[in-house]
Length: 148
Image 1 (cartoon, rainbow, N blue to C red):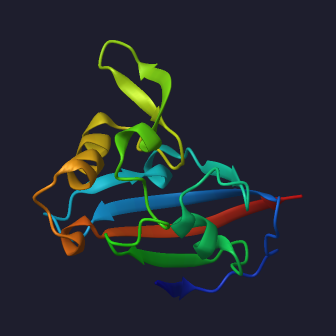
Image 2 (image 1 turned 120 degrees about the horizontal axis):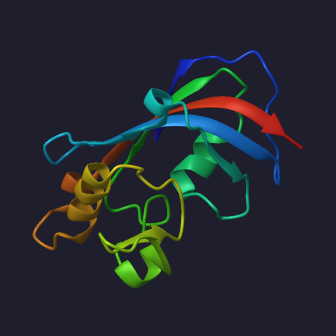
Image 3 (image 1 turned 135 degrees about the horizontal axis):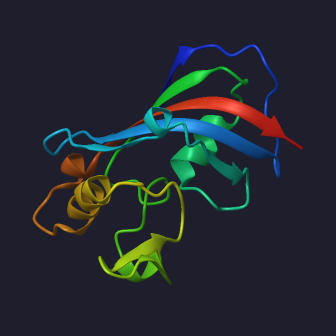
């Protein structure tokens, strides 16, 4: 589910549009760990809407937003179609981001830029002892730009 935090004033994206967003993400149910925050680094995340480049929660949240708008997205752990795959073979590609740390690229974005954020996210997704409510993720997404 998502909540409108701020209404935007600009263009709304459509299928196939390239969107740029700033996002911050946290684990909700398990210790409230920060996953990432792109606005701190001023490195927006860009993806094509409807092309399955981003997790479902991002696709859903950005639809209907306007540039400048902000939405908070709460992704419950049991909603596998909206979050990162629990199966590591489906979550990662074979492409290494950091060979020395053996960090692989996520198949669907966004990917945490910091090792600590990726470890927190992977722990929540990979830990078989956690219940679904402990896998809940929170994202704040700000739509920065829409390109046709």
